[in-house]
Length: 474
Image (cartoon, rainbow, N blue to C red; front, side, top):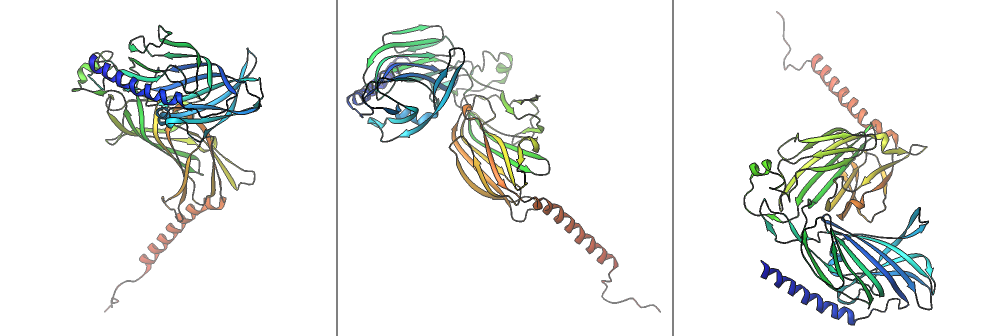
């Protein structure tokens, strides 16, 4: 095992060193007047969702004003990048406020596939001025289990690969990187002087005067037994009924993305000593539902599952569920959660009654999960027209038609899709559509007409003479 680990590290460092050489020898010439006077990066590895907080102090040492600041990411980071936000702090020390900034992809790409993002400043940065930026970006499925297979009683060890210095197109005068691990058990880590470790934290730096596109590869091998919950696919169907409620049905396909289970599973050992046998598994999931939910159900392909607990509050509802079996690395589970919510809590209408506004929440209700593909289907009542979506996220959108009981022309369905969704994507969205209140009478009229025709048929049958030949009396 030790020889294999050394061989992998040697190959990794050889590859990254070659990449660092080519990146360092290339220049993209992006805003040569800008310099990063100080960069502080804090990497949180406490779960399988990696959060990176980056503070940049940027100074314009050129002669012309600059309206944007460029961020650089390696191709590996781009493949796992789920979220990227930037803000500028303001206010006072006692009450700090943050103003969001626009972040957009920047073309062309840099050397060796480096991807750029442009942060648009609120005001152009004049010569001699400086600005402080707060950047948050989230990476998913970036922790590599090593060993890739473990037994039921073993803890899970993972690799995290990165650079001790940030990949930036600017000259960086001083920078420091802090890496926080979930436990004090760290098998090994790359030492790039100066490097210090204290408790749960690794500190790389400070490093002085790093040239553009500098790269210093590091590997951290540590213990992480937190649930690696990945929802391979989630389909949420929100069906609106103007007669008083909204029906929500959620189809989950959940997997454990950690190290695979080696050998057989012993339920006896798991139940007798769960802290020692199955420490890297999980058997509970927590879903935060809207307040005032009713008719909540939880079932899988076999049927209803009774191992769930619902806690109601005037602000939220929490549903704690347990799958039929605990999930180890490589295992999957599929199930359905459904519930109703009052119509008046989420649907509003215009003063003239011709337009309706649905306000709902985008994202996955399950806490600390990564969703590979999230699809939200908003089923509008029959007769709805011109649906439009207002959302703070970039979503794929298209329309479908769904037929249900007593439908004639079908119900419009607004389909929203997004990949690589994390809890930070949870945000409200709005669906606006036109609706003629006269369509609410369509289904009752159909029912009345059907019963009326049925009774007429019964009357005709009872009073009619359907015999072939009349009976003659003597």
